[in-house]
Amino acid sequence: MAKNSKPTSQKRAREKARMDRQKEKEQRRAEARERRATTPPRSGEEDPDLAGIRPGPQPRPEWLEEESSDDKEEKGPQ
Image (tube, rainbow, N blue to C red; front, side, top):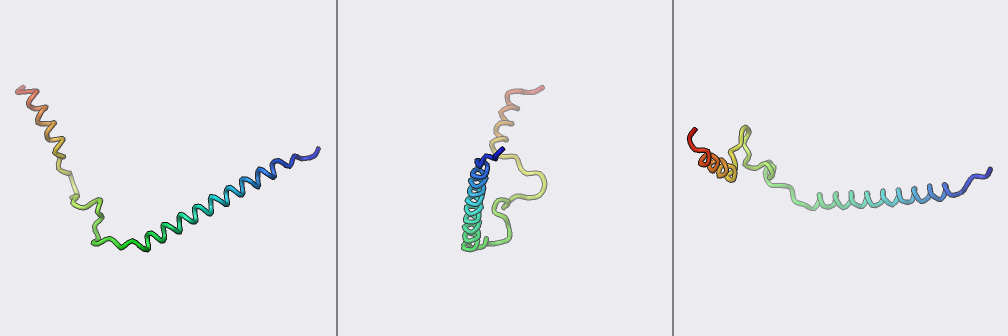
């Protein structure tokens, strides 16, 4: 029996799509490299997301303090 030539064209289309994805990925990588090279380095050694955080337990946020004081008033003396 003769083989169908359809799988060859499907494979060719898959390979072309793969190559296109690789090119797009390389372009994104090049843009990221360029963006990192042009941005100025951060001032200081402290991470801005972690600035002001101390090791250990953190103070309760104000919104939690307000709720807990309301709960105490509702319960009253036990």
